[in-house]
Image 1 (cartoon, rainbow, N blue to C red):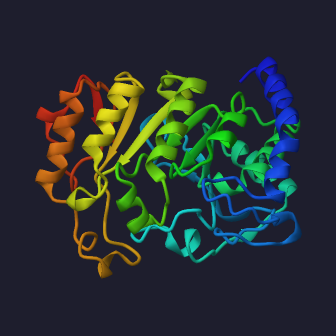
Image 2 (image 1 turned 120 degrees about the vertical axis):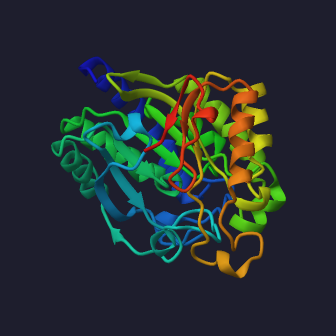
Length: 318
């Protein structure tokens, strides 16, 4: 990332920071719009104050190939997610709140420390409810020498107004499109009006950064949409694929994931308590190709990868 790009990022950050700070005073950072004053210590749905809580910051090699690259992604996991997925694999920090409270100065130093380890990017995992302090930390980090692309890695339950403010700051968007039914989203993730919000923010993300740009096998800018296939068609993935094909682009990069397993409270719910079946997954993979998508990654099913489902630019996500 060159100096001209950094100067422009800092300019945009200075412009939006006051408004983002106001969002903390009457919280509207996600579609819940709790309205609490987090600066004064009031807690809303996510039970978060004004400063970020970080569970871990590490060099991660398990993301999509151009996100991890060969040097890893500088991944920062934020605690206290604004969704309540009953099957969450990271529930210890996303639901139970494990993690360390940091100042924005400390968070900016975390970013710089990750850069020193040689990572390809700064990967913000579940950043939605901490956007103001993250952007403030980025401002400090850029001034101190941060020169890496920033990945916004979200469950997709974000405020459209907030995402619009991130234009020119975020380089790579990595959102989930978890559900195509509001009933399922509410039942299994306590996310009200998830689908409409999710579709709007993903379209906005695409308008900001466009199709994924990869240089020497490493992502520099763009959108990757993650599709976690949940058993018993709870995710409604084919409907989501149809929406993407019709309303965003068939050139988009997709990450189709078979990794679901019944973690956290999933065992208490009939529809969530089992693993994904191979025929369920194959129907999704077939739909990907039938709809004309050619870019992205398809996770193997239980370690298997059937070449007959491999599109020209689709490769195993390993």
